[in-house]
Length: 469
Ligand code: NDP
Image 1 (cartoon, rainbow, N blue to C red):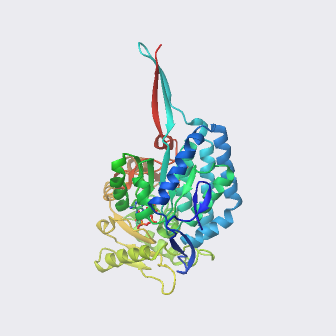
Image 2: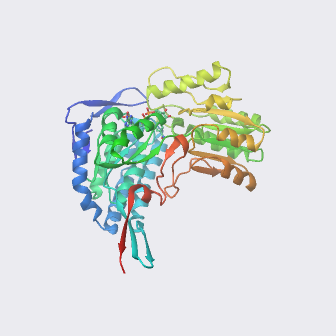
């Protein structure tokens, strides 16, 4: 596929391309242009040219365009989901959920265009104060490979609703669905230049977006290490950043929890998208009084998971790329070899083509052994004795994105929700993220929020006007 600049497909000025692989087979399914600094400069020029006019489009017309985008995405949901599965690896059912969720994101932002406003007050002696929220201008969106459609939707939907123009860069290992979404947004009426997608590597196209002086905001989702690099590269141009850098979510099961519901929730959430979600249930903390029953029931459920190509009827697909699969395998091997946990099920790569790794269950895991997130299909179970200890373990990593507490007791729920350091806490749920919920983290999980009303603060800036009386 070509990249998408100024309302049309085009190649990189360099003429180079990058292959896109099917993670289930290892075969090349397409190529995309290997964008460079020059392509980013061309995209930013087109975006700058188009943004002021887009900012003046009425809220009602912006809303109509975003609603039309949602309808076009829904109309093409099966084809988009197939494309997403083919480049990303997830089961078709999950891909379709993500595509429909992406349509809903644009519809959600369509409903918000008329609510983007500031504040006003009469200041005796001084005058009448008006604070209006102004769009930032051109915004960069750096999108990872794990949930490319919906994360693109979060960033582009919010930026467009606020009157900004966008230069997006999808990951080189999952760029195709984002490119097709950009075409559909254009078909829905987003004017040429307002939304651009530059493909290419993070080190080249991504870095060029972060460094570009005329890009006033970058929303980045990815790893802590790259988030730090983005932060340093952005500093000279003093642009705003929204950084979502992953998490190591605790999933705490209290002794009074509905164990069957907790097991089902843990298995569903931990192996969703082959465990490659920033706010997956990555550490399962279970009260020592019920941990044996939990592990037994979890094993029964995990044994039944069908693994294979996401285009077949499976519960779990491959990891997105070979490097990711190797990192997960190394993390499990280290835990088992250093006797920091017991292997109950899985723990091995699947022979043959594709980036497959068995769904894996580890018990008696030492909290320190999983202080770094494992971004793959691995469920480490950590026993705890008291709620205080569970909260201490939950907070014992550098991350702070999400967490959940499974209990029937309101006081236990409230205590955990209050004391866990994270951007979101669920009670008897995990990984539920409708666009109404502001989403983002604290500490090494980054800063800023996407979704909710909070997006308005990310993608606009206040301008104060004082009218003397
Ligand atoms: P990265 O953080 O490197 O990649 C995320 C995005 O940033 C991709 O679009 C990537 O492009 C781009 N990128 C890479 N380098 C730069 C740069 N210097 N400047 C600007 N953009 C850049 O993550 P990885 O893909 O390497 O995955 C490694 C780990 O990151 C995972 O194991 C997981 O722990 C975490 N991760 C977290 C995610 C989350 O949802 N928070 C999502 C994905 C990964 P490209 O891929 O083309 O290089």
